[in-house]
Amino acid sequence: MNFKDKDLIIFDFDGTLINSIPDLTLAVNTMLKYYSLQPLTISQVTPFIGNGAKPLVRRALEYRMPDKALPEPLLKDAFDIYLAAYKDAICVETFMYSGVLETLKILDQNGYNMAICTNKPFGFIQPILDTLEITTYFKRWIGEDSLAEKKPSAAPLLHLVNELNTTIEKSIMVGDSKNDILAAQNANIDSIGVSYGYNYNENIADYKPTIVVDEFAELQEFF
Image 1 (cartoon, one colour):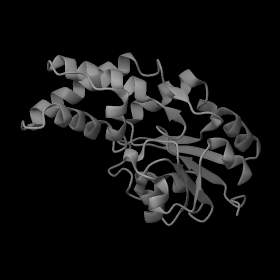
Image 2 (cartoon, one colour; image 1 turned 120 degrees about the horizontal axis):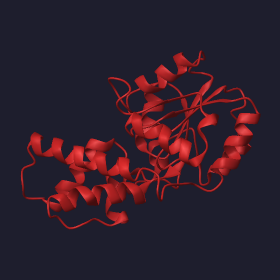
Image 3 (cartoon, helix red, strand yellow; image 1 turned 30 degrees about the vertical axis):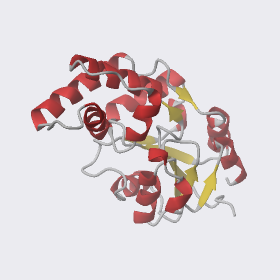
Image 4 (cartoon, helix red, strand yellow; image 1 turned 135 degrees about the horizontal axis):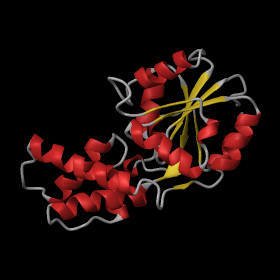
């Protein structure tokens, strides 16, 4: 099997291209400290990641305050504290996974259009791309707040397909999370699941992507 007939590769961000858990954990713990709550470890924060920033904040608070109600005003304030903390340390310990840079270079040289579809807030995407010096490889990127719907809705993927003047048949989604695979299935787009990401401690193969790879560099075999 290969995907050489594709002309658009849509990538998830966190857990696929980058590991941002250390910086996300730092921001979460800054928020928890504000409420005099004990910090969380990276392994505790990891399964909370994937649906966007607000669910991450809510899950962290629920974990530390399991028997307390979380009214909307508190959640809003906590989210604002988290966002401010993350903006202050957006790409300190965040890093690209092994093989990402080399593979992006090859895919770019081979003429593929590439885009990012993430459930991270839009405003955080470019600062990370710029810091890691990979901005130039991507034609477009959209975050959880770019459209009315986010993954696993098909809407973000279909938006990128339209923006980049291609078709669903010539597009493919690459991601580590069930939200990526479900979004691709909802859009009738092929998908590649990477097994090394976050995915709520679940096996990405359980969601039946078109194929599964264990390392990012394996993509070079298919394009």
